[in-house]
Image 1 (spheres, rainbow over the protein chains, first blue to last red):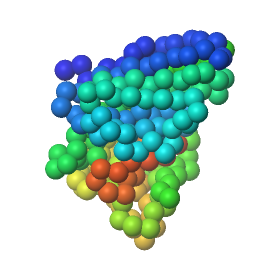
Image 2: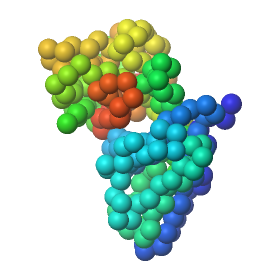
Image 3: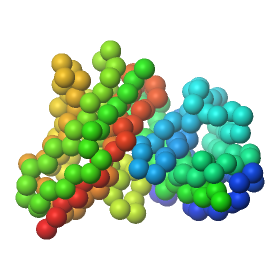
Image 4: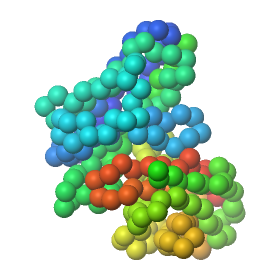
Length: 116
Length: 109
């Protein structure tokens, strides 16, 4: 199994341009997460979905960031417009919920964004 | 608010030496604690969870509620243990997972 799939792996854009990241979670995983990881720091949660509902988006900068998870499977994270400080790795993860929830998150390889 | 602190950004030991990666947390309740690891050019993955009380790859971690700590230990470090280690906490099943800033462990030959 491929695990959590993210694309693109790398993206270089100029400031004020838009950018979008895509994530395909592990089949059957109801919960999907987007994390931001700045250089030298741990992952920070941006948004968490249960199926298609965003249940925790308190740390998502909604003035420029948006996310969606249509049909409760794939998800897209968008930044518009991008700023220099958005340069980071964007991690997607998925997990099971309910009785099967062990707390284990399965991460993708991440999308590294560089804003020039 | 929940918070995880890993006081050492870098830790270097020699092969065969004991290693301890420190993790302290702040949360008034009874949280669930985890250690995640990221080997070079690999994905972030779960190493162990305190609920399971298991030993994975020779690593163990004990939750000390009095000291609010969850230190990761291994009696004899191996070169393949070199990686980035993150301590993580969540309040209850289904809640958000909060990570520490990580400790880069290097095991020298």
